[in-house]
Length: 265
Length: 269
Image (cartoon, rainbow over the protein chains, first blue to last red):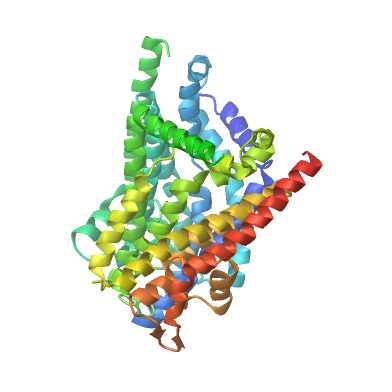
């Protein structure tokens, strides 16, 4: 497979995103408003109840703020175009092109995500006017955090791709996709850290779920809840989920593609 | 005249119902989605407060009650006035003119555009409220029942009036996305928690500027007898003011809307 066209796809997605200026302001504004809200919620909870599960208030506010910043890049969902292509039938033309459609979508998502991650800089800068953020636990943790974000991106992308590929069989996917997104937002630890889940089966399930690889893994490393050798295990688990989801996504794609070819779209 | 409005409105609901019957799968997927959406919101509060049992003196059950009360008013508004949010699109795409040449009130026409509008979320809100009121052991008296009905209808009116005012801005401003987003977030996210956890600025904003606090917080403090806490007391009469605030806001928003429509006619753009 030649890599060059895909780099070009990513570049085009990047510059395309740059044309939606007002959206950028809306995104950053929404992050700041939520940073503000969550800092007040957590401050009240800590003031009334004291520290819980070994996470200090500054660490919690850092966690919540970073989760909102990660929303900016995880929220891209470039795989969504597949749904539109299948609906309109233009997928048939894409399948004739000498490219791999899933990798085209990946390249497009990477381009969009790179643009989205540029929003993180002003969003982070402005957040610092609202809240105090802890530095990463150690320099190694900072590096591992970045790797974990990257792996989280891959898991998240394949999850979106799986959802989009299901469109081959049913068009009523939008609602289902949103449902998975909401369940994921809770189980990934993006709303409440998994450490605060009631101890027992619910918490164990949440930690074991693939969604934990998206938010919980990088954020736990950043605030120092996961250290030393545990970091390796955490990153390893993310790799496993990325691989599993990748295999499922590409397998489903194969099946769907065959269906289009046989039925003629 | 009135009978024409009534007949049109009946057609509107007939079409909505027909759409629902035609797209059954779609209906059930969205119903299920709605359940998940509120389930995640309530689940988040429950998980959070399983570790932190008190939010400025409110237990998770009481915070859940706050959510349920908001949901009643908000879904009532959404069921009957949802299409007000389409006004910016109508103006941008130029099809608002259609409403001006027809012999019915433009606002009425905007509010009776058929679509996928079903009372499923309102029904869910009633169920959720039923659970919430039993969890907090709400004391049912004639007064509390009346207050509840006033809060629900008055709250829906507040909700609608604010959305009407924001939609009206689109007669002057083309890009409203950011403002709409901020108002929506204030409404959906900030009303989930007791007002007392916020700083002075936000409290003033939610009580006086965009009075979303009257949709759930003030009625809830009266209903649950939570009118005093550490460092503050709230007049229990405030909870009764919801319909008054709703009518005042609606009167203002409607005058603004009329001015907006006249402006639109004047410039013809």
